[in-house]
Image (cartoon, rainbow, N blue to C red):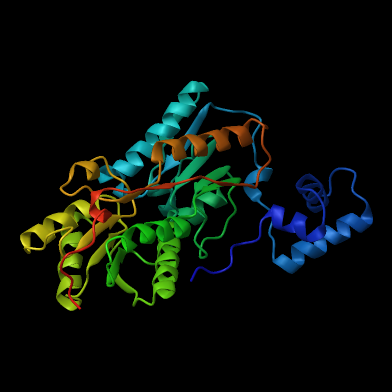
Length: 340
């Protein structure tokens, strides 16, 4: 279960019963704020354990016209992150802004400062040693999804999706097959995305009286690891009649493994994916998935960062980005033969 989120400026403002600008002025000692209001805001901040956003205080007047992207290492084999990056580049180019890839070497004490007006971090990873250094740099940061609980720092904005709701909608599609033994292939606690997926899966299983089965796998697992995890799952839980694939493109390897094992998708087992992929509509049968709309998500992150940098939006924005479930042939018909 996901732990409580770190308090934000908007939370302080709501607790104190004031606007976000008033709360910011009260905390910074600027603006025309009455002593009573300032005391109420400070008390709310203390109650919530709020700490000021150092990045917001370092928004610089001297722009160099470049923003940076920080991505997981899996980007080299991920259609999702390629499309996400393209969305960022497209929006930035339309606003005459360059984009650079920021090396993870920031975590090991780089000697050069980061040459960017702001950063976008896609799917911040729990335990990533680069994150503390990035937030300590004071550079304004927008994250795609909320920060893991073990990361100190506050982004100037977050673009997030309700992946828990997406998982529940995916399980509604699975219901059409009549399956009773779903298993989730996932890296359980590494990102806000994966934690939400697990929470939605557990909720969905509980409401249906099903046993939740997690098949752990690394967030950046190569296909060989996906293959091994799938084989291990089916050896330990042969009754599995649905494999819900969380990692990007993992459904492709799962389908291949099932074919080699003589399992027939749509006959005695179903495969669905938590990340859509260009090949999924063309598999036989085609695979139902969650469309995370990565290109549009990249555009939303870039737009938010530029809005904050250029003063069109205040730091602290928390924007929900809509995602959809794409129902395809893999969940269109009931399974004909299931293990009991």
